[in-house]
Structure formats: C-alpha cells, structure tokens
Image (cartoon, rainbow, N blue to C red; front, side):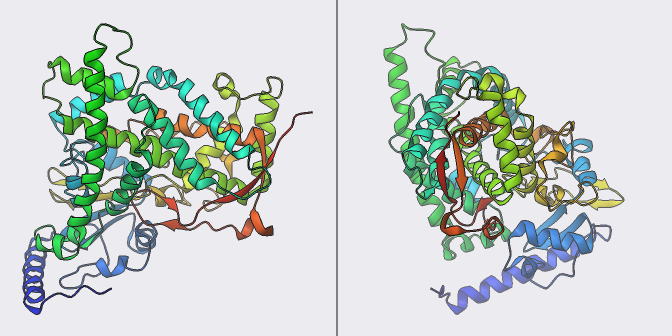
Length: 500
C-alpha cells in the first residue's frame, strides 16, 4: 500500500532536505575518511537499498576501505570494518566514542534511552553499569540461576522427546526456552504475558536498526508521523510498558508483605533493582522507568540474542555433519558415565565451546554493533572524525576479515581449539559482544543460556533435516533487524539417543 503524501508536504519536505544537505556539504571536512560519491538530498542512502545493511556496508568497505565515510540523509557516518580501526574506536579513543546517537526507537520504546545499552555516556550510565557488573549480572548471580536453566532445559528435552521422529520448529522452542529462563531470572517466575512481551520486544528490535527514514532525517519531525514509524513505536511501547507496570507493581506489593523475611529478597533481578531504588543512596535516583529500561536490556541480551545464537548454532551444525559428529562424540564421551549433562563438567567440552565461538564469528548476535557517537573532534589514521559523527562498527565484516581468518567464510570450529582468542573484548578481530566501556555486560548470563541447552540437545538426540533435505540445501539467510536472526524457521527431526 503506497503512502499518499500531499504535494505541499512533499514540497516542504524536499526544501528541508535540500537545506539540510547544503549545510552538511558546506561543513564537510576535506580530511574525512574516503567513501563513495554522494547524491544531493540523500547522500549515500541509495547504496544501502535492497540489501541487508551489514552486507551492503561490507561490500562498500572492500572498495573504499575499512574506515569509510557515508552521508546517510542528514547524518555523517563513519563505518569501521577492520580490527585495527575497531581498536582505535573502542580502546585508544574509547571515551570520545562512548556516547550513543539519537535513535527514535530507543527514545520511544526504551524509556527515553535510559537503558544501559542506549543511555548517553555519563554519570547515569556509569551508575547503571556499576549496578550491572557488581550486583546484577555477576558470575555468582548467573550461577545462582543454574536450577532455573536445568528445569527449563529439562522441559525442552521432554518436549523434543515427545515429538521423536516428527518435524519440530526449533526456532519457536528456542524462543520459548530463553524467554522462560530470562523471565524466571528477572521476575522470579514465568510471566503469563511472556509471549506478548517478547513479540513486542522483537518488533521493537527490528525497528531499532537505525536505518529508517525518520532516523536519517531527525530534524524533520513530520517524517516520524507520515511514515507511520512513531505511531508504531508508541504502540509497541504501550504494550511493553503495560506488562512491566503490572510485574513491578506485583513485586513491590510482595516485598511489603515479605519484609520480615530478609534472605529471600534478592532471588531475582527485579528485586535487586528495586532494592537499589528503595535504598535511596544512589547518586542519581532510579525511577520505575529506569528499572524498566534495564529489564528490557536483560530480555534483549538474555532471551533475544540467546535464542538467535541457538538457531544459528544448530543451523551450522546441521549444515556441517562432521561438526555434528565431533560435537556429539565429545558431549557423550564426557557425560555417558553419568547418563546426564550438568554444568560442572562443561570445562571439558572444548570442541563444543569452539563450535559456539565459530558460530558467533560468522553470526554475531548484533552484526552492526550498537552505534556510537563522537563527543568531540578526533583524528584516526590521518582522517578527521568531527564531533557528533555516528560511528558504526561492522562486527559481521570483522569476523570474516580474510586478513585475520584463514578460509574466513568456512565454518571451522577447530580454529578456536587451543586458541587464546575470546569474546570478552580484548581481541578486536573477534568482537561479537563489542569491546571497551560499551561491551555487553550480560555476556555470562547470555552464554549460559546457550551452552547448556546446546550440550543437552546434542547429548540426548540425533538430528536430521526434514523432507530428505541435504545439508547444503539448508537455508542460511539473515533477516533485517538490530539482531542477526535467521530469515526462516529451523525445522528438524529428532531421534532419542539411548546409551548402550
């Protein structure tokens, strides 16, 4: 259905665009990084049309270099596609590039960008970061959720076993699993609104990629309305906010009733946040909306990215039968004597962990890391990066850089065996979770939600593709959005493994 825009509005819009573009052109520095020629009004927008942004940017970088300038509408963008320049941004000049640019979706859906992922760099962000790293998402607290993971993954195993020999939608099961684990860790129980909540979160993530027309021309507010993007985002926010309001109200009422039982208060993540809120000794007050913003972050990292990674893991394993055989052999060798899989012996699963790392290399959960914005002028490799420049780091391209990875497009988990390369932000050729001050604080929580179900699925079941499909025929296309989800669902057929 085409959007009908009255001529007067369209004419005004074009005048605005022309004026904005003229101002931008006059202010451009001659020492900006190289980039493709720019068209009047739109800059380089046309070069991203018709493809997935991370793939289009990778192709452009091969021609114009790993530090590339693009003009997207009103916005001056620098695209980083190599480990060397990623290190410059996220380590050498990390403070300058620690800010986040304005994105309509994060302002509307994520409580005026007050979550840890999207908030501006400063005192408030440092306070949230400290709460997350010291209290909320520590290794000890993640380990305390082991019983939740075991119970929910056990339910998944029962569901799969009950459908032995039949085609099952693993994509749907992975979403339900990670949503259940995250709900119980965050709220202490599964939410009856879980499916509606995650559906809204997923829709919001698809709109938060930063390439919608309203984000590219932020000064022209009417675009937010005539494109329909703001009404859609406000609807998503209303649905999310309604559910979180109910949950927070229930927790506050429950805490009042149970004040005489100290020891039970910190069992879930929401209670930890509400305790900080109640203490009233923070440098900056923690409002209910701030709490909701953090909860949205937790669900994005703990549920959305975990389920996406599980999908890609099983997809790559099915596409590479030798990898399947090796991973299953290892898991069964380690756990056959016990007859079950538990987390205490996960340190022995070296090949399985290599499979996870290789999957994250080829399919980083967020292919274009959350954008950064320069707080002041900066010089990199002789090029000037002006203040207020939007910086996009292409983790997808960096993970496939042939200068760092042998047979970069091939799925080869053995490259990580006995390798010191890790995803904790010190190896800039491998940054699926970012690096520097803005590295994802929920890595430990998210990875636990991936490794445990994967090990059990490989231990308890043998797998085959439906309808006689051959491994090389399995669809591996991406879907557009802030997270790198599969375009289609993953359907597989399980057969129960019975140790001799």
